[in-house]
Image (tube, rainbow, N blue to C red):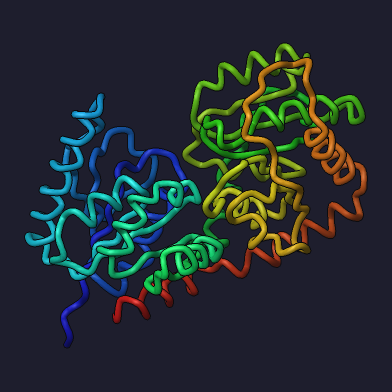
Length: 372
């Protein structure tokens, strides 16, 4: 019998986040076909179920200051190099820019796969050139990123791998518990999911929500994700909707909260592949998303949800200023909530589209590229 390939997955942390979730899912999905381990820079505050997985903790967390950061990169690279040899890795697949840099600097004992998980990764042209030169494969979360690598860097190592979706597991998790909502009467809940990060554009959603409330009195807004959201809570209060907006904080199982909503809205002005959008669609939520680079346009394809123009990246917490783009978003939300026939049609389209992002296709491509 041929010896099983050994695949090392490299990720900074396993705190709440899109590519962290994909890393854990990848480890579980590949386990029947190869030996797999996850190398962490720091195991502090793990948010995902890692039971039964082989975890290597480097105990090299974040350092402050430029010198500290450079030193950490060198320390991590040396440690990963040592583990590549010790563990006899055949493939080292890294998730995110920080892990990618360590992967390419830690030597070629294993085939180097770097994962570009966000369009923001493309902004650091120095790193991209390094990855193009050093990596054996560049795994892109969207076709747009792959196309740009080929066009701008003449890179023919790039491939597209959409994030895996286990619909059966996701739908089961959505039924595991009842969400603890702050309202006695839930009304029409609009939901979005993501950590506290300006790139998510949540101030646009809050301002659009004020307009929705003017037309639909029982509308509520829920934002699921890690963070204090103090600035957003202050904005909600100044907008007069503080009691109608719920910031759930981090949820190890966010899916019951998504399931309780009527509409999912993505207001990011930049993404990679928005996992939360597909997860919401798998639960049958009609989706409204900005046409940001990258992901939503490839997911919705002009028919599976409502795509609106990308929104301004200029942060504006002034409650007295509501822009035309926020008015457009509000109109789309109102239309979906008021038109039950349209909403039900998009619910079915969401479920249909989510079927295209299966775990089977994900594993098939990795095995094909990895030769196992």
